Length: 219
Image 1 (cartoon, rainbow, N blue to C red):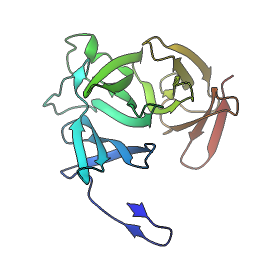
Image 2 (cartoon, rainbow, N blue to C red; image 1 turned 90 degrees about the vertical axis):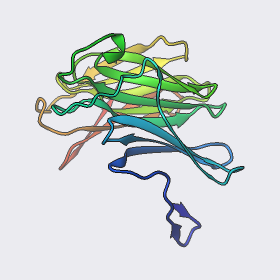
Image 3 (cartoon, rainbow, N blue to C red; image 1 turned 180 degrees about the vertical axis):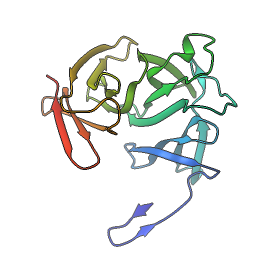
Image 4 (cartoon, helix red, strand yellow; image 1 turned 120 degrees about the vertical axis):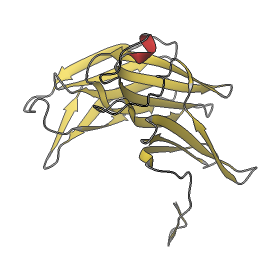
């Protein structure tokens, strides 16, 4: 949807059965939208951006080195979820997301449960694991500093911890965590929204429950 200050114009970015869940959007320097979202029917992430020269949306799959393989499987929830997209100072798209293998047999390190980072370089998506673990990486929230440092806030569902992972873009991640008091394990649904502090450092993580809100600061 595009707004002109008085009204909204709706247009279709992509279509299909269960396409567009958990959409996350950022704008480039020219104001063109870039969107990451889930195709739930195929258990895969997609990326779309507005191409002004072609005057149309370009859609592609987030496939590449290290991406989990699609499975035709009926069972407990599995696959990627909760994409969070940001563009760096060069306009390069980055996506943080949660991945769960479920009860599907693991065939390699690309099938590890946890929170992941994907970056699009030279037209190809590269996927790396930020932190592995069962139920680690719920509701990731990605921010990028002015110096292009990456920061991802997310939730450890089994141990009810808020976690922040930071990286200079070299593939190495430093992780900080703190326990969220007063949450039941693991019934209460929790979502995350992270912002950078006034000094440019990632330290705020907001956790929202169904009937009330909790805020936790990791310093």
